[in-house]
Image (cartoon, each protein chain N blue to C red):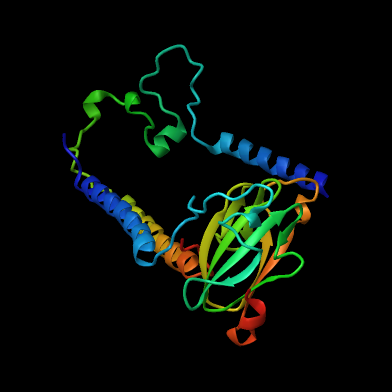
Length: 105
Length: 172
């Protein structure tokens, strides 16, 4: 039973790795020794560039430090913050102080 | 140095969270009166604790005020006196101070499921006070290795309804 599970697990892992190599992002022209500045693979054209260094500097644009508000991240953090605070209050006041005999001195 | 508005908010929030943690723990210590085991027990004779001024014959005694009991426990290899051969009995709604020492080697005295937990050292007395509100039965274990029978060393603490606790027969 354990052997079967291990075999299936290894097989699934190998399959995922294979598929992610075939369909995933990677530079397929790595072995070329000539400079192909304008050539881009199908994957690169579809997904946009991956590195800032693969685009000419004249085509880049900078923004201010304050120009972008990470609202999504802030919401997620606010949620975590609320969870941590409430869990702390619950654990300390309910599970610890109110739960069973505790040393008072 | 320029700090993003969100970063500023987050920094303030984190500091407030830390302040909340400190405030709740302070409230627990000062307001609700919860404490830790400390080193205030004093010294006793290492092999015959009962002979010392600091200690009495093992058992349950009336304490300093109404509803307060002093329980004197000796830990030996491999039993609690009282606790193992007969359970320690106290009434509900009482405050109990355990006075625990050892007459041979290091032992532990832990009321399972609570933080009433102390080492018992030959020559020293540990004093731990706790309030028992509801009737329940607790196990007592030795959690400090004391020899070949350490894993069998156990006892029990019974918090009984006040009506079942007979002051005259159970308190020394």
